[in-house]
Length: 252
Image 1 (tube, rainbow, N blue to C red):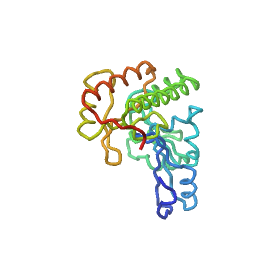
Image 2 (cartoon, one colour):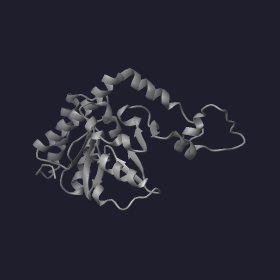
Image 3 (cartoon, rainbow, N blue to C red):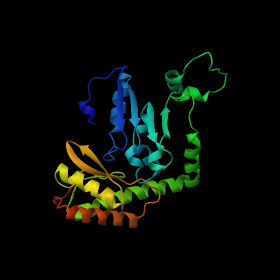
Image 4 (cartoon, rainbow, N blue to C red):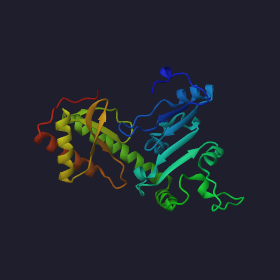
């Protein structure tokens, strides 16, 4: 997002910025955007599905500069914490806004003067996913979480470097744990993705980025090792060459 190109803002505006784009891992410039929003009373929401976790890794925390000035944040725990899928978290600077948006009144919903959990979630009842999130954080600890995130980011960079060295086009600057790679035209790239999934060494999906079909690599498992990356890279290059995928790499 380019702050200088933003339209006029007012108190009814919601600006949604990204912390760790799901395709590229990129971060919007939060300091400038939040400053613009504050001047006009606009609300800034941060989509931090991946990137909010960068705050836990000292070498990646600089990407999160200014994000603390936003009004609300959301992140997914099923990605980097590897807990069940519906373990999303939402944070709001002023809890009154969360309460006002989510509280539902009905005769059968008896409330008390204390904090009612159902008034702070979109669902009146849900699985106790907080237990899995707590257990993952408790078992990892601060240093374990930081090591896992940093390790995943370094392994994504390792995968990208190997692809470039093999002559294939990496489409993004690898700032976090995401890599986008093109193997030529859309048909070749999609065919390679299907072959790689059938091979079973690793699993990568497809995506569209600025109109270009690409393979998306997301390194987010706590158990992934350098050896896993090297095996996955070798399988990818072997399949790409068997398919006659276009070579001519470098970041665009």
